[in-house]
Amino acid sequence: MTACFHICFLRYRSAISPCTHLYILFYTGSAVKCNYVLPLLKHLYGWNLWYCIQVLWAGQKGYTQLPGTDSSNHYDAFVVFDIHNKSVRDWVYNELTVHLETSGYRRFGLCLEERDWIPGLSCIENLHNAVYSSMKTVFVLSGGGSKANGAEAVNGVIRQAFFMVQQRLLDEKVDVAVLVLLDEMFPRLKYLQLRKRLCRKSVLSWPRNPHAQPLFWNSMRMALSSDNLNLYDNNMSESFL
Image (cartoon, rainbow, N blue to C red):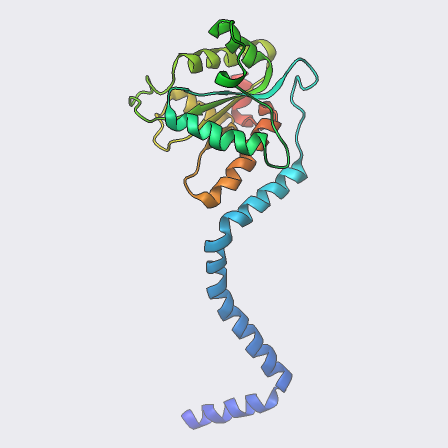
């Protein structure tokens, strides 16, 4: 039986041309290399590839002009955060402002409480001006040291800004809220869960993996440049508005 198989193999080998041998060796070697090379490339450049895909997708889809871009809006975004939380404050000034105001293919004008509020005006007046003179309001939230129900996760300024943003949604039919979560263990607030279902692309989480951070900044630019109403989940938008 073995001798018969050997004879058949020799006849088959002699029947095929040398070029066919080369093709077989080439494709076999390519398949073996792919099994080892592709997982390695995914591990090393997976986030970069995904970032490039997102950029191309954004360029293909384009942006919708935000309501009010030709009106009295002085800032692209008002950034609301707890100025007494050192880690959040450092992130806003060392990460957010650097990437959005001074780098990237589009520069954004940001309004910050400590830097841009007018001295002499009351807190509520400055807050009202900041919310209504900005096309978006970015809430930078951190769960560090907060209670499980989220009672201490936001301070008074953040709460008042949130109420004003909701009032703009009711009065002007414009959704200007963008949420940035700096901690994975941020309290599961009911509004946050609803927000993720209604407009998932307006809720961003800061990644700890440095390779994923370019994708985060691309998503942030898309969130600031797009109309949230066009990003709503169609199954919920009609009932929400």
